[in-house]
Amino acid sequence: MPLVAQRSLRRYIVLLFIVAIVLYYILFSRHSTSPSSSAADSLSSERPNLASEYIKPEQHGAGQLETVLHVDRALLQQREREARRRQIDLKYCGRDRCQFVLPVAITEQESKAQEHFRHLAFLSGALDRTIVLPNVHSSHLGACRHFPFSFYYDNAWLNNNRRFFRYLTMEDFRDWISERREIDAIPTSRELTIDINPNFKFLDNANNCFKDLLDYSSYPPTHFTLEDPEMFSKRVGNYTEMLLEAFQQNQEDVDVISLFYDRRFGYIEHPEVEIPLPYNNRWEQLADQIAEQLQPFVAIHWRMERLEALDNLVPCAESLVRKIHEIESIHQQPLKVFLLTDYPHLLRTSKATPESMSFKLNELQQQHHDAIQYLYEHVDVTVTTLQRKNQPVPYDELPAKNWNVITVPPYAKPADPSVLGIVDKLVAMRAQYFLAGEPGVCAKSSSFTKRIMLEREAAFNAGDPQIVVPVDTFSL
Ligand SMILES: *[C@@H]1O[C@H](CO)[C@@H](O)[C@H](O)[C@H]1NC(C)=O
Image (cartoon, rainbow, N blue to C red):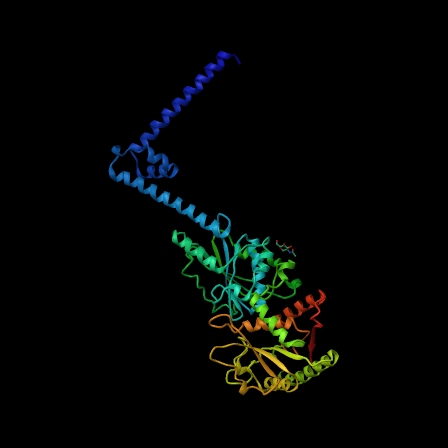
């Protein structure tokens, strides 16, 4: 291109540019001299800073100015709030936006409930949501229980699986809500119930203590039912995917999913999910001390609740005693017997309370009493009980020998008697021998037994010299 043409083109562009600027100013000042409220609105929402620079006070009525400034301020406040919200979320979640799964209620007792929790943690990870660690009490897990997650558990499993999910403690979660409420950015929430049968009543008494802390107004509660056959082969469809979908239900934008959860089995296919949560170190240490006192010993798990064949109980006790004597003759040494049972550990004394939340004193039959009596008449039994202030163990009401009671400090006020179940389980894992009642014949099967068994087998296979026989059953 010749030089002259180039130059005139440049001149032409500069001229165009100037015209554009002039036009822009004319248009702009027309807007600001006759602001209809909607024009002011759209203008200020597009360029709030420009608007406040170019509006000259003397050209406007005071009312108009106020409107513009007011809109401006509201917008600035909204922006400010959004920036602060982001800061708060960043602080608690390490990202711009916090989104949680809050397990308000998980049905079933501790061994099973923690299994459900582990599946939920992985599921939350797949949903890209942070799981809030539920509180614990009376062998249950749920956001509104009395004590923090750490009262029962150690964080090792959680930290080992950081690559699969994120978690937040209940304390931090409550702080997050407070900070969000302070800036008037109340987190939204939706209640989601997932169950295996809508007619089951297990979740009926679950109360949501976050009702007044979160904003549930935009999201009506939802319900999802999915049956739960234990055999994976009997399941229709991919359960992980179906549950993920139930969580989403086109409402991915809600901040907190307040979950009510009643299931029996898992669905996440990952070996890490099968690894149980380790217990808080204070329970491990207590178990070490108790096991040391008992060594060498045989631990027996005998769950009697809801065993229908009541007349089997005494013959089962006889068979158990024979088995213990056999073990003693092989071991060439008398063994102490550590008994884990839902039968009251304080027997029929005035201070006896049921050892299981679901096993009621009035469900105890003569056969239960006779079976336990047969046991302490023939072997040296040790059980645990919770140490209670002003309520000493009623030794004078207990058998003169063979019924030893070890008191366990509750480490909390008011006491949570279910910590005994945790301590008992940990002691049983340290026993040289372990016997469990044959399911359906002498006892009810339980995930509690399974947990002890798996742990003992793993220790045995790893060469733990303490474990002589990982597990055996007693039957008729
Ligand atoms: C079920 O879905 C999950 C998640 O998409 C997937 O990881 C898993 O492999 C699926 N299971 C089967 C048996 O297809």
